[in-house]
Image (cartoon, rainbow, N blue to C red; front, top):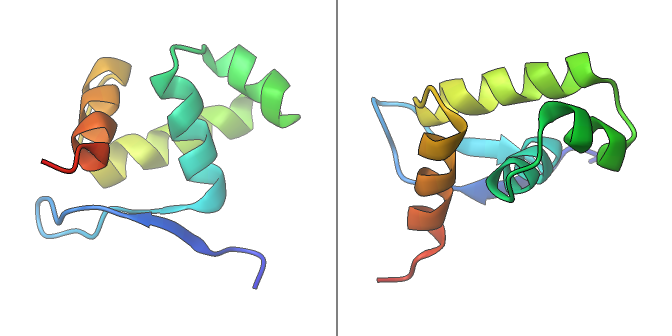
Length: 80
């Protein structure tokens, strides 16, 4: 089982917001303010691969920007 489910969030628009391990890594780096190029360099993948992950992450969380994604991730991590 190389691909494990890394995190589960709340349901949004009837979809489960479950990220793959790699999507979670990309999302965390985006949340830290890294560009696609910087994420690609850190993860040793192509920039196009990062763009694909970002697109899927945005779709799963129903967001359209990095700021909205960072807010969503922060709200998932906040226990209150």
